[in-house]
Length: 440
Ligand SMILES: [Zn+2]
Ligand SMILES: [Zn+2]
Image: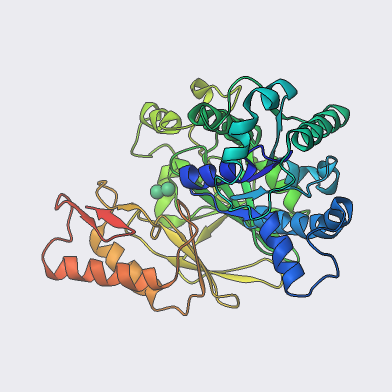
């Protein structure tokens, strides 16, 4: 999410950026700071008093690339200042535009006339303006009128400060901005969020459900492997089809509803022998319970009707065993049987890249080991198994993707300690370890 704040002089751009920083903890980039850094370091012949158009031509291409980088990295950033052209949006493809909210601040002529003393007094509310000689009534009126005219010309959104000075109505304004942000989130209402790990590995996430489930698409030269197919609330096939033109094999880390939701779209799928019964009418939860979990803490997409939700059932095209290898052409993925969370739970290990796809065995949140079908002792053995691998990157099935391989060792150690303390059994309680925990 990028918030672009620009506008006429003395409209409080920097103060707004500062307030958003405080309220939302979004960092902000001041284009003025960038300008001064580039000028003072001798990177340009331009000076602070060069023509605004020359400064814009120089600075804006740099700022656009900063914005694109932040969006690609899924980082929030407020960008504040002048030197944002009115036709700014032409420099971004739609995928970037979806992530940018633009605000242009303008004061009405009436407002400036009625409140000029106030404007002058608060002009330096954040920046200590050393030389603000340009802040004359006429100059401010001229500048604001010009910005307003350009906004109307280019048909772009602007926030008109007309009746009240908006430091006096900060909360409302912030709420307005907040609504804007919510709108953007809604507009990004693609159910799935796509992140790229490398040119041939893609994360497909479902952040609108509290479980924050991640599926992984591994593209090989001959096939693509989809590790887990998600919640089944929205059609993952549509998304996957755009990310590969190879035949797709689906595989589940385990046969829980939130990992096989999209299996119906993939006739070729593999599963572990220990969970075949769950795919054949013997899943331990009723469909009513599953439906409750589907709608729990979820921003459901339009048109979704939970009454139509069904639990996937089927026969896999290949039954997997521990240490089997799935070859998708130039990429070999080893199957690791890692029971504990469920009897046939699998992790997928791509040794060449050091990638470990951990399913529900490892993620940053409360691990579940209390259902009757879980096995705390087996969980420990499985953690020890994956902790011994030279893992470079951990890819969990839920929650934060900011997860480092060292967590595997911490989890194995904690489980071992629970065993030594005689607590590694159902009903012993919930244990917290900072960024993760386990419910036994
Ligand atoms: Zn699970
Ligand atoms: Zn899960």
